[in-house]
Image 1 (cartoon, rainbow, N blue to C red):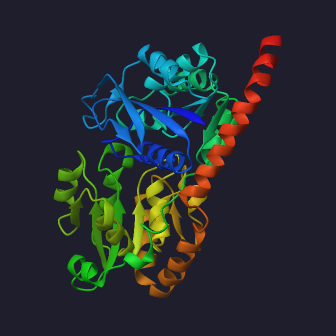
Image 2: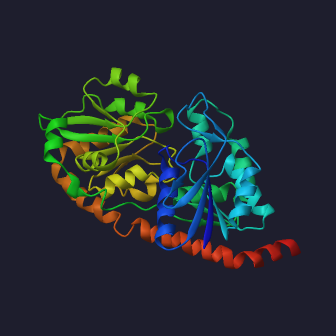
Image 3: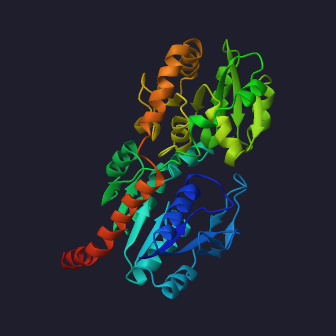
Length: 376
């Protein structure tokens, strides 16, 4: 199969959209398929054997590390030259509109993957009152796709409420070798918390959409040492308000694997996550998770089994949940075992095979659907 992936985000930007696209490209290459990627801004020219065609992008002043693609007819030329069987549109919003338009011009079936809560993102950056306009645009975009894949059941329900047609659920995989309890490091733990306190860890971008200010509610939790892994515009403010916390900066690879596995409690503060890969990586590492009861974590965290949930805007509930796990070692250990078990069978190979099933259904079923629409 030949797959053209038009993505709103790609390397060197590291986020959920990029991570998913990379895993899909690796799977396609490993199984003999061909791919091309269309992505905004500067970056590597290929990945997993697939060429990456770069189009013009700009960096918004409120989010200078994120390149936003500019709609362009060049996407049509790229797809025409490649001749794909299907167009995979990753988190369409701006550049994705060009991908969907190109697919329609070339009569190529398109699959759209909903991954970013754009409306929630806009609210976090002060653009209140924009929800109706954003959802109108998203509904318009996704209606052009043969199928839209939602990453979690709460998002699937929201898309249904907003009138997005032809929906199915497609979750995300987790590398269960990279994220595993075997990476737990007594030496690292001794450096992070030399007094033996329980390590309460956060992993994520320190920016408004992840609500890292919620972490300040953990200041002074008895027996807890807060470790914050990540970087972003909110870091300096957090450092001032949390002088006892350990800030590691951005980490990846083996360093990240050891850090996550060495936590005793994994805390997630975001409330707009459509899936939340960081939570799944914490669970795979055998760490009980405390997360907001909103979006993707509702599918991942089973309260009392592999973690605890708190009301999204209630800092007191967050603090109480963390305190409960810090105080109860037996509960933590029981949940740690269940955390790992809860993601068993969610490797990327299995998840990508599900995606290939969607590809095949769309490619073989598209002609009939289009004839039905034309007749109507």
